[in-house]
Length: 307
Image (cartoon, rainbow, N blue to C red; front, top):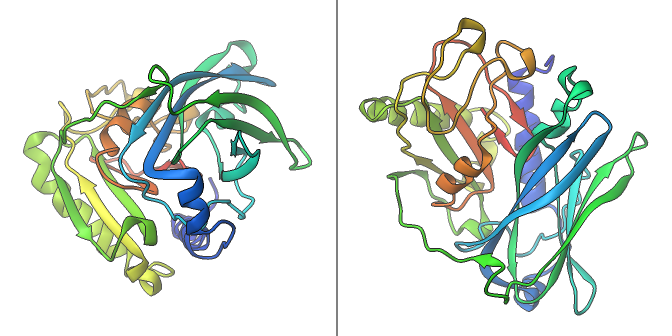
């Protein structure tokens, strides 16, 4: 990871702004034609080893109002190792696209991936469709061309297909910035790991400090009014997070750990379902995980989360 964290922030920040403000693919009229103002969350299992991969459907959920743009529904940035497309089946119209990268794809580059397969849990989110859709996931080849590797038909009106359980708010939410409706702004959610209930005042201070520093730094400071920021007070059993190389193990809400793929300061989590179940309490476009620990480190996967 030779890129500096400041430069990484600049790239991610510009990507956020471009994605949410620059594209003019589908109008709000198209949104109302194909979608209702809810969010469809599709959880999948991503399995394989070096050179092979496959997907399997886990669960489809109906979540709260769609927090993304209702005008820019096709991702034109051409970034990420993967791209998922959503087609309206009755008309065969392409109604949503989103580029992203995965922890699985990075794991495929490790020595471990040569000898044994593994499974990672992943999530695709898009506006809730009115009728049957085809979800297609594609991956780039060495020439950067996308090829389809998974396809599934989803009927949102079939009772057995979509989990519509209404979850109660399990955690307190702090609003750090509110500049308008989620569909018109970039919505960030900050969630902490390794903060006990007794550490919540520290989490509030850390989240506010993070937010203040972020929005005093370019390009964020010039676009402060384009963002909403919320923080979720998630309590862990222990303070701090796992350090496998030091034989330090903590019980935390999100399961973050150092030593990802053998890099001492690289922090990610494989507990995607637990993370998604927590952050679906608030509207979000991008996820920021704060670590309550004393070792320098962090990480990030494009359009997944940043630690």
